Length: 264
Image 1 (cartoon, rainbow, N blue to C red):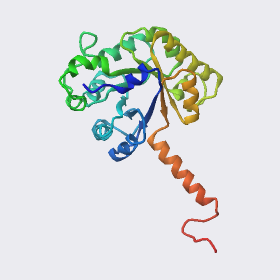
Image 2: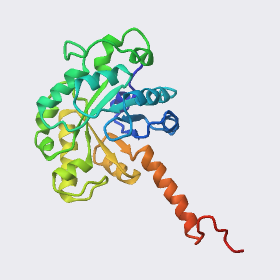
Image 3: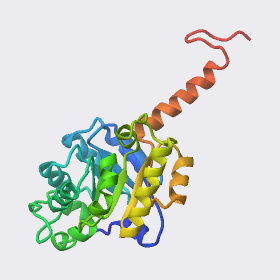
Image 4: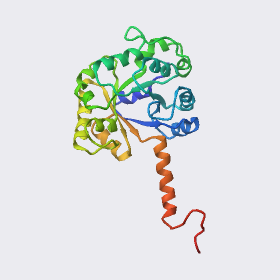
């Protein structure tokens, strides 16, 4: 089975630089896969991506050595198993607030005896290669619940005690909403910042890796300095919008109007 290089990066004590795919285009996924990310997440929750469009994205990622991950819409066994069968090497699952929900997530992602994942890795066996998928999948694939509510932070010790949780992923916007703050990335509200610090410290205590979504490289570096070992940089759609706005703005600064040539 193809090794999960995300785990290898963690084993070296380094941070994973993750990218985010929200655009349902195999070409944009292929472009992102060639930009130096360690892993890419196919976002099936808030991205404009369903199962049928996720498959070409996973295929595009597999033209490189980048590790394909997926964020599912919900803690739904059917969706979890199906995207793993499609070749995702890890799952990010939203709104996991209790140890019971964390255990349900793990069991749906693991083959017996730890879980009850049904056998049928239709594309995963092609992507992973080899004949040992059944015996190695439980150890190689990553299970990462999202910690994005005040309730989840309160229950974090119990959630991280569930066997099979490899990492957690902080959703800053939902975490902020649950704490009465504005939803945004790169948060500076004291309560949200403190919660983010509590999460990474609790993860370190349990030997679980902490991940977080960031809007900028500067904030991602700050999170790495605080102990996060899985940092996402914005998303494909945000990169496209930001660069387009920057280039249009550079032209607009000259006072040129659309379709009107400047005077020389």
